[in-house]
Amino acid sequence: MLASRLSSLVSSLTPPARRSGDQDRVWVVRRRTLVLAGIAFAGLCLWASAATWFIVFRDAALARFMERQGAMQYAYEERISALRARLDRVATQKLLEQDGVETRLADIAGRQVALEGRQAMIAGLVEQAGAAAGEDGPAPAGGWPSRDARSAPAPLPAQMPPTPESLGLRTEADDVAPAPSLALSPALSPGLSTRMAMLEHALDGFEARQSRAVGRLAADGRSEAARLRGVMAETGLDARRFATARIGGIGGPLVPAGSGPFESAVLQAQRDLGERDSLRRIVGSLPLRRPVAADGGLSSTFGYRADPFTRGLALHTGIDLRSEYGAPARATAAGTVTQADYAGGYGNMVEVDHGHGLVTRYAHLSAITVVPGQSVAAGQMVGRIGSTGRSTGTHLHYETRIDGEPVDPQRFLRAGARLAAR
Image 1: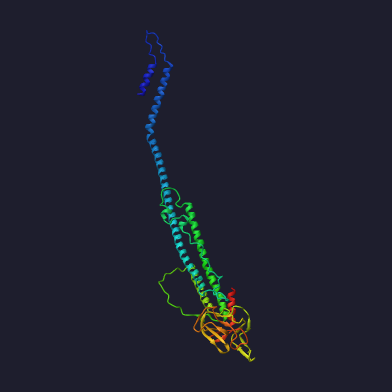
Image 2 (image 1 turned 90 degrees about the vertical axis):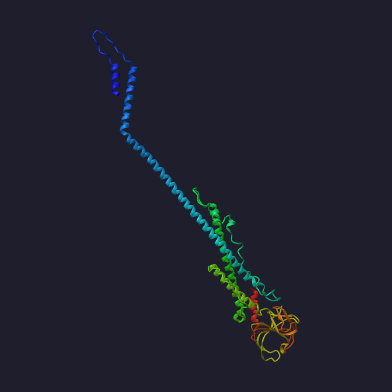
């Protein structure tokens, strides 16, 4: 078809052959027509080339197009897969963080309960440390106090352990760490983590203060027990002499309180305070006070001396204390009056039984103010100083006896002075 069109175009431009007898004809072709013809020819060639290329290379072009589309789809799917994996990682991390928050809160709650239990133990120790402070009543006139008022029990920690609520934390795990979502945000906020760290630090400090309080209580108990043992040694008495059977039974269901270092320290502190209390009771029952208020000194000591009447060697079974006529003679420890009458060389004499084989005697009295069988308190007046019986002048003859045998009263008086000086 293209060839036929070209042939018709050429024939239209070519002049016809001359015939004999005709005039010569001249065909004039305009320039515009040639340009249009060239454009038309070029367009036809281009169209023919494109059609030929499409027919020949159509399959290859379609294959490349499909390949590009496949590559784009694969890249998109890879990106979607990467985003999904990232979301899974974030969700897992949030779950782990939530578990961590719940674990920390559970640990804090458990520690708080344990600290409250420890606080109760310390309160019991403080009560035990100060319970005996008023057992012996007020200090007797002219004597040393039955308790060392300066040895106060170690104080409790100033406040109760902090709670999660006190620092703005809530114990419900759902409120602290919500369920993970697809949002790319951390599960545990910095503020919450800081408050939890503050709470844990506060609990650590409170636990340390509790341990120090128990240590101070135990140390105070051991220190006072050692001092009281020294007082007992000064008197020459054995503490086992004063061991008595426990009155009443004890019992109850077994509720273990743990066996950690703190519980062991509390148990040891209870033992130390128990030993101290036992020694306190023993020392409080000993005749350690002075029988006269004013210290006029000794006119005669215990032991062998020249008898003031016979001038021969004789045993003086007590000590003679200078004092004014009519001054009060006071019991040096609590006890029961076993004798209150005239007793030969003793003159007017009062004997007080303090138990455990300990007896004191107050002789040469001008007056007796108690009767046999009467219970007297430490420091209570039993008579007035005089010079009855075998005496050369006003004084108080004071004796201390153990199991009926006279011993030097000065060792008891020295022990009492040592106790009062602390």
